[in-house]
Length: 129
Figure 1 (cartoon, one colour):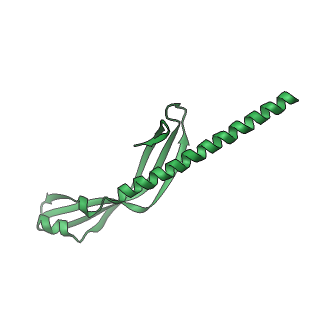
Figure 2: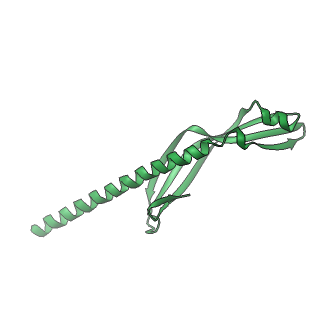
């Protein structure tokens, strides 16, 4: 009976420890994503790509939408025990004009939206990109 109790106690404690570690990893991914999202949202009209078209010029840039979702999954790889998944919508803004300067000046309108999924690995105690 004592052996059974000790084994049950050991299993219970190891599960609690794993859950605590999982919670820390999950929180660290949320913090990592908060920083990554901040970097992505900086991609605004200052990073405009402009190309010549048949009728003039088209300027465009892409930026992350307002909402995002995160998830963490365990792996069987000891070197990378977790993967983190960040999902969001990216909006592509465009402006066309007769001149390059006119296209870059705007006004820009949402031309399209697309779903983006980014996957990150947890390695050596930190998230990698």
